[in-house]
Amino acid sequence: MRSRIITGVLHNFLGTYTSRYSDCGGYWLFGMLVGEVGELRINLLAPQEGARGHAPLAAAIQLAAQKFRDQMDKAGLAASSVREAYLDVTRLPEAKQGFVNGRRCDGYAVRFAVRVVSNTGASCKREISIFVAPHDSKIERRSARAS
Image (cartoon, rainbow, N blue to C red; front, side, top):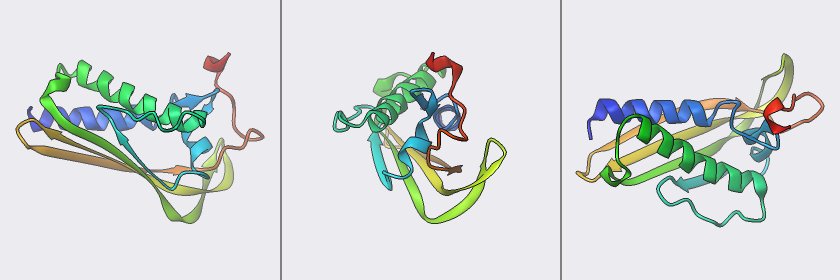
């Protein structure tokens, strides 16, 4: 597995996974989780079933695995070329202010770090941090895709 290709896969995966297209019930998925989940580890090759009673958490786990597979497929990489792949989602402890739909609000920096180890033992890691405010239906617009 060439490192340039997998670096692109990880970059694209993080971009699509953290985008506004990752939603639950028409609202941004991470706004629904940020108040409840401080740390989350997702096995991208074998997503766990442990979040059944919590729709946003289950959606986050399944969507991560799906978007990772999609990016691997687009790059022409077989899942069998990867020994392990994990996504760690961490809400940083300090609250901060940011903007949602042009309105100032409180929220958190959330770090998304993905690490892949190939069958040859080579590893690659990529991470991003984004501002996430807790879901507030008064200021958030529901996606038309939810209809």
